[in-house]
Amino acid sequence: MSQMLRITAATFTFIARLEEEKAPQTCAAFRRILPFQQQLIQARWSGESCWIPLGSFKLNVEYENLTSYPSRGEILFYPGGLSETEILFPYGSTHFASKMGQLAGNHFLTIIEGNDQLPALGHLCLWQGAQPILFEDV
Image 1 (spheres, rainbow, N blue to C red):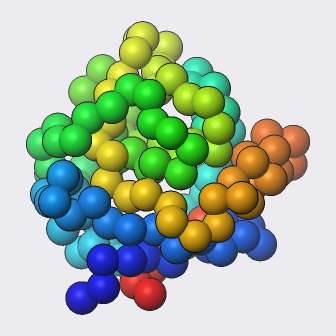
Image 2: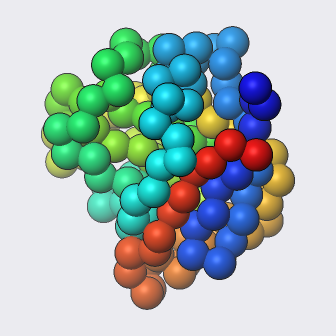
């Protein structure tokens, strides 16, 4: 299997590398639910980031490869706990947080193609609202 995923968000296409060495549980569990389609919205607390709220959805993974300060294009899965389960999709300067305070999520995907499009996607979500997003194998 490829270590790459295609992410289509609104009219933008990205290629992302699964961080299988650093986040093997998260990558394997996420791969099992592909293709995965949701809505991407502007993050409420985390700065220049979008998110996919997942409520009580579970991938049944532990915390691994944690960060609270992902760089642009470093996608996190938050398994839940202090806040609801979510995927964080940074397009700029990000400090992962919720109304409960700072969070840390599993860095499991890194965008390697299309990084230059991330700010435009972020601004689209900020000013135009929810956008469709699809994760699939390349």
